[in-house]
Image (cartoon, rainbow, N blue to C red; front, side):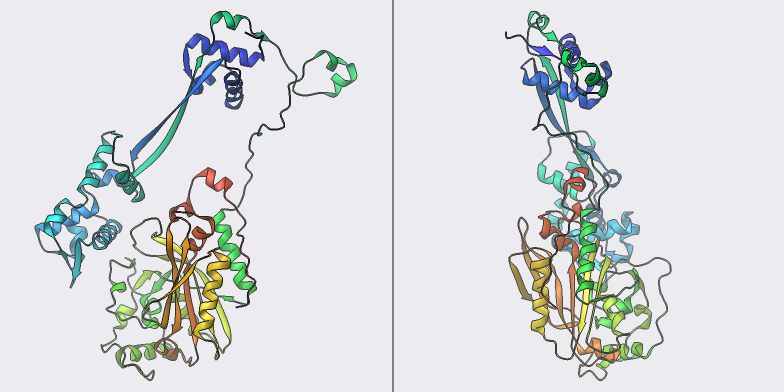
Length: 501
């Protein structure tokens, strides 16, 4: 064997490995007074010189979250199905009959409705097919129990579902072991030398530098990374979006997180019996349950518009408008509530307003949905603006803000706009995802506030714009605690809007 030289610390580690036969790298730190970085560097050198072998063992650990532990007694959808099969089950009794919290009731009901297992009729939960309902989510329940028992051989698709619904945590672990590769006789022939890594002024003055060996300096070895404080990439994107909109002449409008149904629904001509106003589709406030309606004239105008169309040319919704329902308090499910509030204070056109609003909905959490999300919302008021202007602005958002190259418009329906359009763009991995909707406010929305000219309205998901811009496949990563992503993700928003809106 060609004569080898090692530094003293490398030799000490080599002898520790020889004495232990085989040892985990993490255990070496207990046996020698060196930091982990120095140990890893020495091990890498020993591997490069073919003195030891290094084996990395990777394993995946599944563990139950608090929510997962609670679900061992039954997944929300399973408990709801069992109760509905046993007796007639009304929406208001679900929590009492199943023992589920309101968020779990909302999640379970949403999951069952989305999967076509149940339907809601007059406040009652109806099982569509009892045979399929009995086996629905049983495999998922069994997988959850297998995790609790410490088993690892579980269907990966079930693991993905459990993790996405917050029942389990998935931890990837890697562990390195090292083992001596040479014989003891070869070990004794290795020469130990000490190298100097720093040249001091005293060494230069005394000339002692001539008699020492300096540690080679590698120009290609990557140094240890130092991570300074930085902006959260998503937060930075939101701030840049706001700056660009202000720069384009938009005024920021604001509204409360805790909103009345009047501003969120009634002022937008959404009927009081609309499905989006059901208790399972909104997050109501427990105490206080109601707020006090404003006393302005537009309250009466909105009420009359709902009842018979007032002077808008519409026939209205043909019912007696209920002010008590309109005064109910809820967490704001859409930013359009802010636009409605702004209509009541607009002096004269032209004017452009925007908001970046935090919204809340009891959605089933998945790759493109969360119970909390940001929505950029806006209105443009002007006597000569058209639907074509709206399409141009939406395309600007998709192309220049989100970086989309394939944009699609489709007709859509919203209670408060006509005509209405859905904006979608192609995500590199998820395919077409909906950014949001837009349209021209109906006269039933604008005339009660004394506005008799066109108002363009749009609402887009900020998180989905960001996902498309940075090829993120799961909206939950926007609030990730993954340090690698937070440290390495691009911070600059990269938004370049040059087209005048």
